[in-house]
Length: 164
Image (tube, rainbow, N blue to C red; front, side, top):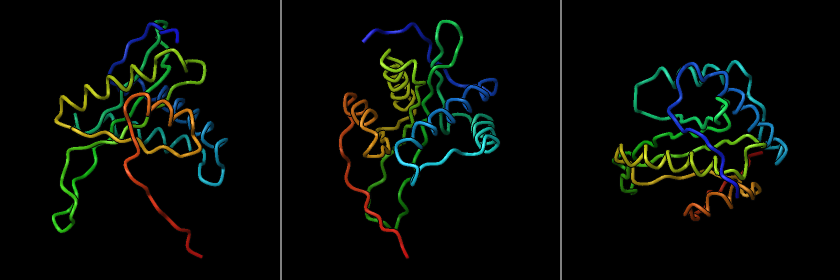
């Protein structure tokens, strides 16, 4: 794998247009995996999401951007803190977060995702988070391989059923 020269940094409001394009490109790729599950979100909704997230409580969640040497955003990772289970449930509280990684197709295989994941781990560790998860669709074989290469393992099953 040839590495590419890039910078991973926290996103700012000025990055919203790039983040929107990354999210929509990711949605298009997922739609090809399974149109029965995935959709292309409305651009305006994605703009509102990232605008609100980046203007929200500092440090609550993170959006990190991978920027190529030419200044182009080639990837991003969201780190979204998970709530502790309520007191009445049996699960132990554990500071945790879920990561969502996006890398543009022409930047895959160049170390962008690895750099983003490494930066997300650093961000999370600095904030006392001790467990990261990634909700990956089983048919997304490339994503499954990527996360496994970085030490992620099966954490159980999520069973579901459609109601008639």
